[in-house]
Amino acid sequence: MSIVEVRGLTKVYGSGDTSVTALDHVDLTVEEGEFVAIMGPSGCGKSTLLNLVGGLDKPTDGQVLINGTDIATMSDKDVTQLRRRHLGFVFQFFNLIPVLNAAENAGLPLTLDGVSAAEARKHAEEWLDKVGLGDRMFNRPDQLSGGQQQRVAVARALVTDPDLILADEPTGNLDTRSSEEISGLLKQASEEWNRAIVMVTHDLHVASHAQRILLMADGRIVDDIRLDGQDASATVQAAMAKAGLL
Amino acid sequence: MKVSATLAWRYLIGRPGRTVLTTLAITLGVALIFGLNGILPGMADVFTKTLFAAAGQVDLTVSSMSGGTFDLGVANEVASVPGVAVASPSMRRSVAMPNGSPVSVATLVGIDARTSPKVHTYNVSEGRMLNEGDAGEVVIGSDTAQSLGLHVGSAMRIPTVAGTESFNVVGLLANGSTPSAPEVYVTIPDAQRMTGAGNTINTVEARFDPGADRTVVEAAVRREIGSDYLVGGLSNQSSLLASLQAANYMFTFFGLFALIMGGFIILNTFRTLVAERRHDIGMLRAIGADRNVILGIFLFGTSRVGEFLEKGFTFVSVGNDLHHVLTQTGAYVNDMENIAKEKGKVWKRRPTALF
Image (cartoon, rainbow over all chains, first blue to last red; front, side):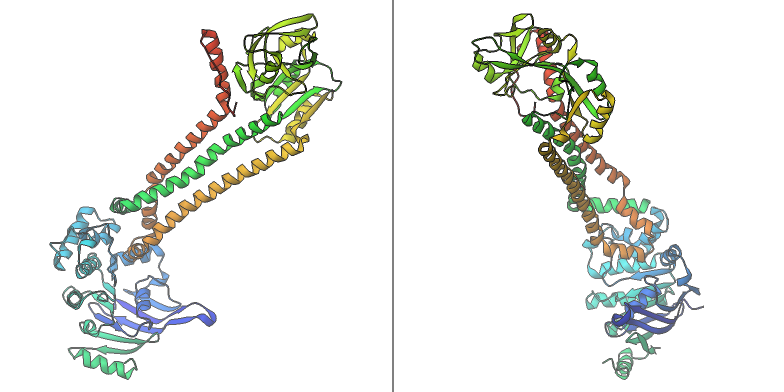
């Protein structure tokens, strides 16, 4: 069964003459352990698609099925629980709680799910160790570099063993070296820990870590490229040129 | 709830500057609402008393339709009417002073020493005001005393139905007399004896409860005592009443303004807190925090809000105490005078603008 199945997803902001169609009948399927990157120019609907898949926004039309369940039919409480237990989020600006340390931030989804503080901390420390922050457990975000903060965010996204990780430009605020580290981590999450990942990015090099790249323009998916070991740069550039995105 | 408390507590101790500012803003907002609204009734009451003293008016005056005297019990009937705070009986008569006196005519005012200071403001500049049980003692205006060459402790000769009697001057009033008919204050029993009025009086003066509807109370007094009496209310004193009403509107406006300002400060503080944590709220929702957790962070807790309210009630208490001091000091000063008199201690009352 697919982890994510999107059918005819449409999102229109505003109404009448001022309405803007951010997503226009998008169809998408993401399988278990699959790493999908979404690319496209600003305003093409990448982040809107991610927000709708994550249940952070409601579609104007169409369906989002997570593990076969249409999230539009779920109550707010159930969607919240779905996000807590089955989805992980990584944001461009890390979005860590500034007054909590790395271990507390990483363990926050478990704490929110009612897991005891000791248990949450144990799991958080395991994941922080896996993302290379074993020596930074008790540092607060302002005592960590951007790359380290994003690694804490990745640990936080993975701590509940979710089926799907949604990453919205996770390297958009990082230097090249940190971007490479985070991209590698996400690839590891997909390949080694079997998590499905949907990542929005503007960076072709970052996208090249994925197994599949979706090109978007004007609210539609205009190309679906499976890399399968191909040179991502040449393939994607050719596809972008074909789609008029260069 | 535990996670809300933990997060809220971390925000509180993690950002001490913000916490201090927030606490101050909320405390000031609560203080503004409760403190100012606590003190306003006292201010309004003092203002009313000051205005009455300046105008020589009371809320209500009862006299006989025929101009004669009536039973002392009428004062109790007036006092029993809802809305009447206090009713004070008095006996007023014009008295021709002895030949050769610089003051030809005076108004003899027999007062109830217990209730009269609650209706009138007597500004004693020297000596003391009359006390219950006083006999053969008199209080006069300081200008009258000057005209007659009298001072505290002097003997003042006043004509009575039984001939001229000598009274001991125990106090001088700063605002006690008018140039045309100086007022001479004695106790009611003395006045009744001096005028041969038996156990009767000819005036009842009353003060209303704060905020009482004057027209309603006046009508109730008329119903209570019947049609043989002339009831003169402040509602007939249009300019004074207009001043009082204007002042009441002003005080009400101050109260309303304080309420709005305090509310605005508190609302704005919480809005700023929410705006500052917008990203955190969005992230928390994304990783699975339900609405109650978010709400709990801001309402954590109830104990903090309780503390703010507690501080607010301290201001209520301060406002109430100040109100009490402003309105009751006159009575306490009188008590002190009585105690001083009983114990034979020297007591000198100093004039103030309030009592």
